[in-house]
Amino acid sequence: MQLTLERSGLIAALTAISAVLAVALAGVAAATPFPVTTDVNTAIVTGFSTPATTPPSGSNHVDCHDRSGRDPVILLHGTALNQNANLAYLAPTLANAGFCVFSLTYGQTSWSGNVGGLGDKKRSARQVADLMDRVLAATHARRVDIVGHSQGGAIAQLVSQLPGRATQIDTIIGLAAPNRGFSRTSNITDRLPAARRPGENDWGPRHPNIHYLNLATTHDEIVTPWQNSFMSPGANVVNTRVQDVCPSSMIGHLGMAYSPTVAALVRNGLDPTHRVPVPCGKDYPG
Image (cartoon, rainbow, N blue to C red; front, side):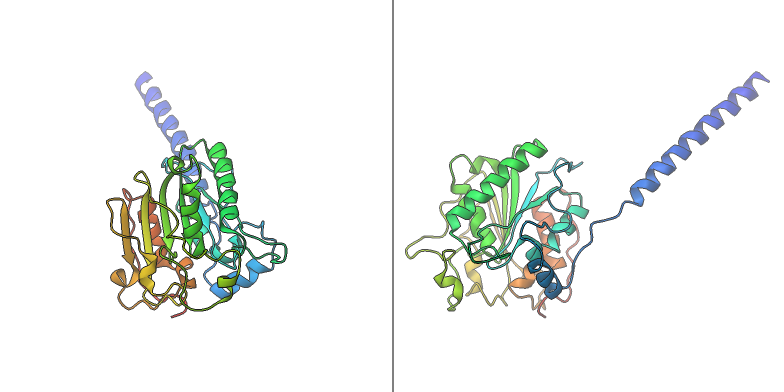
């Protein structure tokens, strides 16, 4: 009789524990992912219609904790864009993968409204450095990773040249970033404060402690020739052409920030010990 009672009590306890675990797991499974914007044109229109301080979905959650212990990730938009317009796909995609994501709109001018990436690059670099301080304080991390689209990649490198900042950066990933200059085509950015000054050589020296991943597309219509997105070879440099991964890809310059292919390559660059499959498919503007 005593044995029967003990067994009954054990079964009841195990049943109760199972119920608690089921509820907990159901809560995790029911967690709503951050909405991901896949329509490039809609993302840009929406981004420009909101204040430049509006972060993309999944970004700037100061209470974020990466359970995998990875560095927080700062995303930087490109020229004549803002954080919400340019990062509405990449920010929530990374956040849904468990990364702590942060962003800002840098480089606004007195006349640019909600549009950033138009002001002096050195001032923009200082704005990003200020964000780094806030991110490191909020997350208690020692270093950050930076992913920059187009001009954002240049700004990331300029930040690394500021005193003491290189030691606070683990990885810099450039998406169609102008590592060897801007477009050879004439455009308005050539006459703006954001333009590179004559005689400037890239964006300063590379740092041996920083890992560099540069992603480029042969169909880049802004950074031309597309090889300008690559750095010279080095032990801490990886240059990857999207078409080497997906040969039929027609992805253009703007599409690099909205591509599942690129997002997977970014994830693998940020967390190489937990690599994900890299899909190939239709990308903007293909």
